[in-house]
Image (cartoon, rainbow, N blue to C red; front, side, top):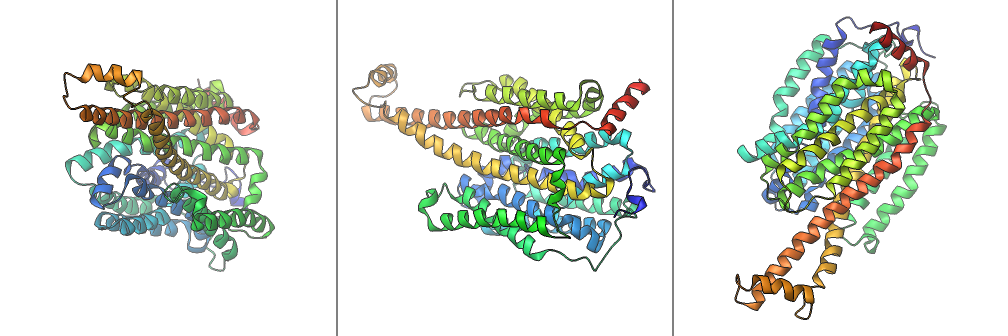
Length: 521
């Protein structure tokens, strides 16, 4: 039973909501930034630590998975140690683990440090979202979610730019060291402005459902192992992959069954009886997969095929960040006139169109031709995030917002991690498929090869050299086709997700918000 202070509108923070917002968004931005800041540095990290690009993708996915697991326990930890104290511990550990990432000398050391980073940062997103939703009155929650959205959506897009500049001018290690001053400043500001609401009293007697937590860790960990390592060991031909798939298939359904039966679960899955929350978490996972999947492979596409250095590949993605930033600024005005569901529908369709445009890129594409599709891709991301978050949480009581935010962010992280793993796997697999198909045309009896050879006779005198040039062209074209396949699959995913927005329920609170906005204008 919620205390009176838990009712919407009865509790207000002592300090200005915007000071509270800045203090939590600063560290949240830092945490989300680290999901993508390493994207453009992956080839450099791989070279520095003697690993393949596919192996070094664990630098991204280990961080996301560890964060996803921590998300589940964030609500309980907030009660057990106090939310303000829990946030301080998280920011402190995140800062220390960032130093360890920069000091790593081997890939396993870096992955362990990234797991610590994910554990530390996992609770920051739902904490920040819950703090913002509680600190602002209902009629200003759209503005609060727009501010939160700038961190969640824009940070992964700014990350490649910052990471590329640091990598080219200093070292990939400094993409982690820069977290230290931000973390220290965040700790100071949160100590000054953040406070625990009266209905979240610290309770050291709070008990955690260890069995349910163990099931979730085993299930998610095994599933991530399967999709990350399957490509390297020929999938189910490997005994460990078969065992991991079995663990995931048993643990995850058992986890859901167990949590639904507990009186005090650490993850309240009963909240998913709310249609809006269930749909919102599903679309959050899809959005995470599409956003992070495309963000992960675009810089690699630019570096490996277009020959861009790290900074230039990050800089080329700036139009995407500008588009997201603009949409976050104007979205609160548009949503009151157009409606949440229509905005999200337009966003998913718009993302699909821009990703299809990405699939038409070729090896000779000019940098200026990347600007428009990247800008509109970022613009459409903002069309989804703010309406999705607002509509998902609209009908929930204030006391349930943190639990719901944890579930929402958990699915987004898992979706992002799965999206990155699948995209890297499919890009590698499809490059092999296309290379086999294209190489079949390299034959002294093939009409196309003979015609091509005639054009290069003036360049090479050795017939074998012609074969070498032809094979090099085949490899480049095969890799290009594998990237365009990935962009198309991401587009199809967005199209499939689009109709689901029509099943959201309306909310009297959202309607009153729109009416108040209209009255103000």
